[in-house]
Image 1 (cartoon, rainbow, N blue to C red):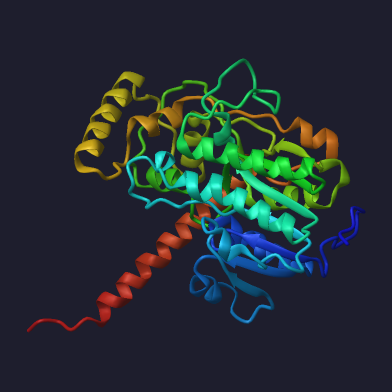
Image 2 (cartoon, rainbow, N blue to C red):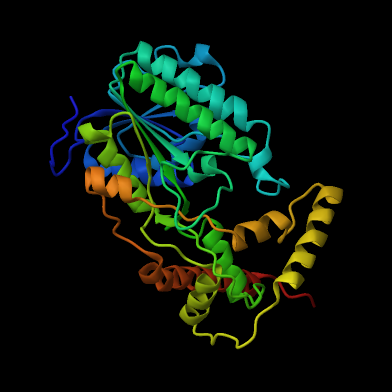
Length: 361
């Protein structure tokens, strides 16, 4: 039985199953569960991809496809707790990864299949790691919260919202369930949009950004995992949906300036006007449609960089006492150093390879 007390390791020896374990967040979650002493099982469509990640670790790897209910039969036997992260992963160069049709069968229908199988096996608790994409492009004064009606405007967002409904329905039937909606995640060791922005600024491929004054929420991956563990073991979290962030809102201009300073570069005294960015984005979007491949800067990218995606995590703090341990002001120098170290390492490797190549006579 899972304890809801403040034990040092409340998940110790708890039979726990994770979907999406080979993803960027999933890998961190499995590592944290193993450190907690949980009895970890991974459910994946491709076991051969999972085996090398935790070579020598004590965990069970099971094979199933969420879109095929027959493969889920008996997979949850003996499991007490499920962390559900699995979703469709479109190719990185797809023109719009959030509009891929495959999101629906994998995320919406697949989650319903998973919930049905988990209930049939008597799983006690299920935590679903959803996304703020279910909120859509809703805007208003101040940060949005759980009372803001979700208005997803992508296939991905609609599929995530449908998956949430399936999970919460299981809660109404007696299972302890909780949904966590997270914003953009950082702390993923070189992965993610923020890491790409750091690289772009470092390579002088990110223009001096205008002072638009937008606000976006972020969350460190370790804080997301801490929140997931908290809602899995806290009785008050049952049947609830929580937005979880690092508690701050950051403008694109602030991010640009902090990255420049962390790189040891001065902040330019001029900015690129918004109309110039919009013109470039329209041209890139036209090329995307013609070439059917993702361009470095499109109208969707401009929208993400200029609009608000600002959310309040007051509910999880008030209900459960959650407090994030990281914020971007403190993490940015570390992330920039991580990028510089990886770049220097890659440069050194290329130099060593060239030094070993035969010289033509």
